[in-house]
Image 1: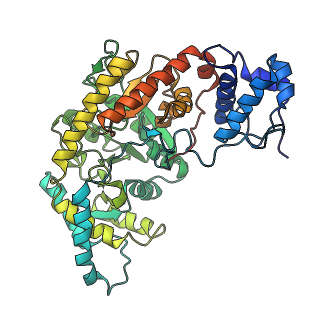
Image 2 (image 1 turned 120 degrees about the vertical axis):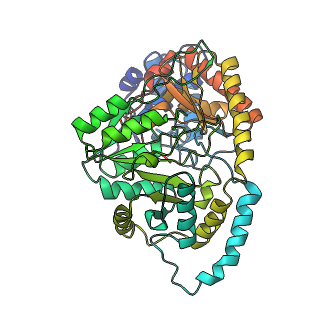
Image 3 (image 1 turned 180 degrees about the vertical axis):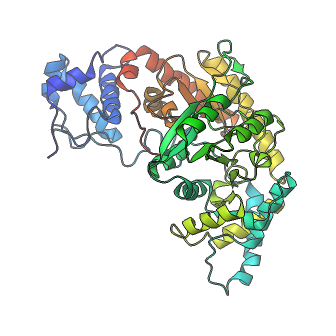
Length: 494
């Protein structure tokens, strides 16, 4: 049976909620909302009546009534005025860090690091694909490996990058996440270990948890401390190769999931020296190196590195057109040795029987003319990056920002461990965020926030000003920060 919360217990949970930094009803509503999001007030629990809570708190009933009304409006409380509302999570609003879901009107989305399509180029590729389609209509339409023209186009790009590749070494998937799920199911499985960088890509961490595998996080070295508000260049270390090799030798993970090219969320890129050493030291440990290269083409500073697969044929590579062209294509791939590709195909057929045909035809066209939209996209991202770094330095000088070498996001160190609380408060100021703990395990990274520069400079200015105001509320109401701490395993989001 659903329970109820008595006034004394609720007051104990609330703590010193009324700091005077905002109207009392709003401060009360904020803290209750944080408690619900944190799980410290469970779902479907009846809160104390307005009168009982007002008496116990020593405030007017009007304050409690207004706070409850605000919670009802936001979807955190059910029932009408006068009834004992039950706690819940909004169904029509977006979860705290749920990128990729519907965004309420007027909210700027900084939780999702992705770009719109490369306009006419993608449109033309689909138009051309329809011309190619009739030749395939007599077939069944199922192809668990991928259409030959697309596999050949992908293989040719690897060969041109200095990694001789045949079409038989390519498995086409429905995006990079689909590719990772296939690899996890084939190589890791339940209770086996998967090494990851820490922080890492949230969707990958979710996939590892969902597969039943155990995560082995290896911390990335901290960036050099910048002066207040300045954008720091990444340290020359970038990755703790010694830590990774030690973990492979002693923990014996089945695979390692790595993002060496404009790492999400830090934007770092692994040097060729580090790549060569990692591959050499990993040999013989039994750990398969799985490399996510979906951001590799977003090279904003012109850094020259070789793909990790250039150093060993045993490396498994994940690629995608989602970041370079459009996530709506839902086209990714796996590059590996032929015998491993055959194992991946066997796994894939237990999950689905093949990808959409028209999208694959369009993707083949895009890969053959890959550079056509890229220069303009990179120039736009450089402008956005410089705008964001300048705005953060001006308006949030207490945030220390690691300057990304490429990719789509900046990794910011906050002055206080307030990332989750800031994420919950930010929608009140028109911004949606992904909290730092989404990028780690065990509730780490409360001191960090990932901020994408995928919006135009004018929108980024609006977003940063909103972040400044949200940060000011957190600073003025320490109880908001103290009340909410990230759960040990953050809720899975897109």
